[in-house]
Image (cartoon, rainbow, N blue to C red; front, side):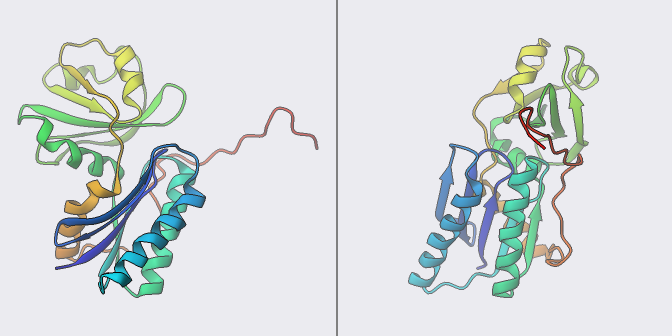
Length: 228
């Protein structure tokens, strides 16, 4: 009965969760955004206190691996790697789109594809397409959204779009096969099943060398009023 601590910080939502044998034991979530650096450490501290109070032993750390917010991913992965190293337990990395798709599996039938969309700024999204069994139909890519986006996929499939990038598609895509659900965020509590599957399969990453899947290079911008 593995005890797994999961961390998700790829978007504006910061969350972590503790599970044992597929059952959620504790979770912490914040939907306010832009506070991951201060919140995640506190969330983990509170859950570790719970672990000690319940006389539990953590068997693995799971982390959402991206793509998503560069800063958010860096914070989450750094925390996860530190815990993995400090506790001497393996590290599990789960693709963020797959986490989101697993959370929506029961919302679709076998004829509908799952399309988690993660905001990549401007009119761009990180998009992945899965079938109901979470088999990848189209790998994650950075797409510029317009009225012709995903026309080939929509021509032959109903598609459920969701995630913080879906609003851009909702405005642009008017195809009758395009469906949308609002307010879907990747959450640590949604990682439990995938984390347990990875643990059972021994699907771990190297704690020392693992890096998030950023997909695009980070580009720093200089404020317009910056004085040199």
